[in-house]
Image (cartoon, rainbow over all chains, first blue to last red; front, side, top):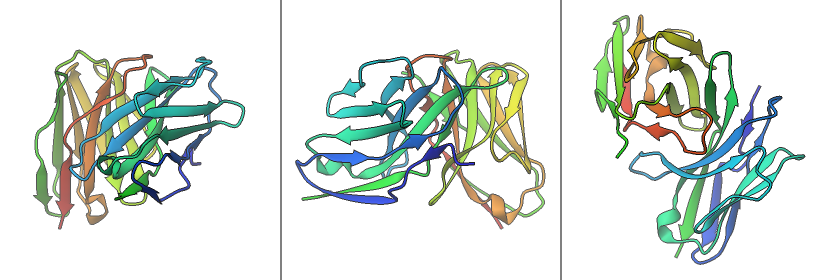
Length: 116
Length: 113
């Protein structure tokens, strides 16, 4: 069963506008972590932002914010004031406990295109 | 700087060969992961390890095995490579239970012919 769902295979946004990338997750853990990563065409994976399941405030990192709605099990990424360099694949990920440690699983990703 | 280094950027192997993909990290992270990345499927977890000699299956372990003899090194083994294992393989490492993201290697593009 899909545990991380990103329903938008591709998104377009005009430069300088804000964009929301959707992510829903499924877990029975009480304690878990949610992450967003960016993968530009160069292929490297860049960590953007983290939200802990017990954090009451939405996480923010510069132009990135995470809209965490625990009851809905959603963790959407909001990018404000989009820039051309934001064009990339974006992955939502969840860390949850496993038998002996923690594992991190990823969604299928959303490709964001920023238009000039 | 945290570094996760994968031994090869590109590999071409023949069907039936035994293939070793090596990953080394230099930050004393206890957790290490192997993923494969395919278009439209995102990153799928193959195996992970939370300590030396400890390993757990991820979501798609079939056809793969792993070895972690030292904390810094995590190897992915394709016992008998098949064409459906042609993919990009990504290694990652992380600390447990922190808000720090995982650190990824540069990836190995494996082609099985």
